[in-house]
Amino acid sequence: MKLPAPDAGRALAILESVLVQPTAPFHERRVRAALAAALDAAGVPWNVDAAGNLVARYRKGSARPVAFTAHMDHPGFELLSVKGTTAEARWNGQVPTFELKGLRLALHDGKTSVRRGTAAVLRGDGRKPGLVRGRPHNLLTLRVPAGSLPGDFGHADLPLFERRGGLIHSKAHDNVSGCASIVAALDHLARRRLPGDVVALFTRAEEVGFHGCWGAIKLGTIRNDRPVVVLECSKAMAGAEQGKGPVIRVGDKARVFDADAAAALEERARALQRERPGLAFQRRLMDGGTCEATAFGLSGYQTVGFAFPLGNYHNVGAAGVAAENIHEKDYLAAVDLLAAFAARGIDPDGARKRLKAWAEERFGAAEMKRLMRTAR
Image (cartoon, rainbow, N blue to C red; front, side):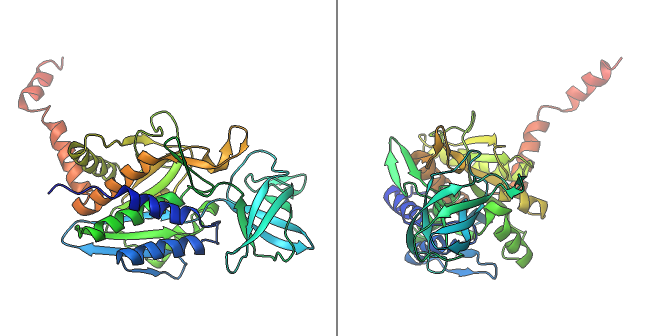
């Protein structure tokens, strides 16, 4: 059966509805609510686990089981103490490697996520935690609006959603866009009544050490009897270039992922590509950072990555803090491919057997005899 293509307008509307929400580690509630609203509109059931991760389930027909996962947070800050209009804050998640003094920040109420206004950096930067002259790298001193409270949070004051020249610019693609692509694929499956057996996990606090992911693993939110496809936004590089399709990510900075799962994903992608000649995807080890696929792999899950090539990774632009960007074509192709992975299933064991058979065809009795005849 030829699969219908997703509605691009719907997929982009879901992306916009999620990207405009504020997010930071431990402050993902608005992103989670936007994802849940899109799932409700599609009729896809969901729940929240004890760690605060969002979990959606779609099941129709007899497709092979698969799990999709992505994280809902992006590097941001949280106020630790406030005195008048001066606050001490901690930056959660590595972002810039340069001085942030004067940077404008969007500040949100820590309980309601409603925007309080704009803060400004008086001192500090967002590098990894570590001491410089006795002061942690990731501490900031901010000028904040009156009424700000400890626990308030925010992010760089950057565009929320802009489409220009084929690129979509936002303050936080990584990895809100991965979440949106999964929901858009589930929306397509549900509205077209396509087969699938999907557990979708949307995790919290990835940027500070995969906290939501580890919580889900320990809680058993996703069982390890289905392959896990981990969505990410990872730094664009040669071989993982914007506009040339999403990337089957075979590894990250820390680890090579499951070879059979990667082969199965590529098989399904090539099959869909034959139906849609204009569809593009790439395959690469993307070692610009470490992602949740490493955590799942270390915990015994059969795991592979699937990534958007990202511009201005973690808001680091050529001349300072800048909006991240992904290519619109990459996002829409990912939604199409995710729906195909669900509807047609991915079969790592079958992919391994087929590859082994292909390789062994090139070595039979005649080849063995020749080796033995020429051994000396």
